[in-house]
Image 1 (cartoon, rainbow, N blue to C red):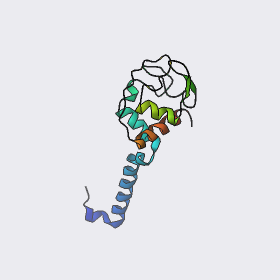
Image 2: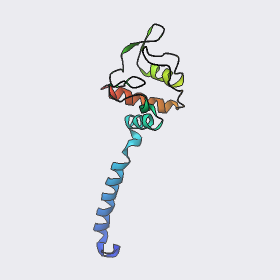
Image 3: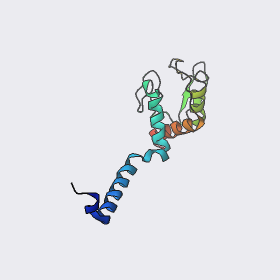
Image 4: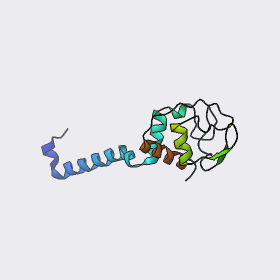
Length: 127
């Protein structure tokens, strides 16, 4: 293997460029709210009960619900939007979707994390 001295300045510059490109490709999610939201949903366990597609588990799938008006237990409806998601996370029994058990736990997320999860759910709906 050649030493650093034998590679020369041009070789070291090329190596530095390649390393920068590889590292940049690995760490680009910190500026992407959709990627952060997906990671949060995975890390706090949302995906144990919710599917990123349309499959119903314990809770509804996410892909086809954003922006929809859904029936609530006890009557009434709610639009699945940022406000509904925020209420669902901070007070899960406030508005329970009809046909689903009131089993969602209160999830201790910061406002910014809820914003990121919101971006992820909106993305799943194509928005």
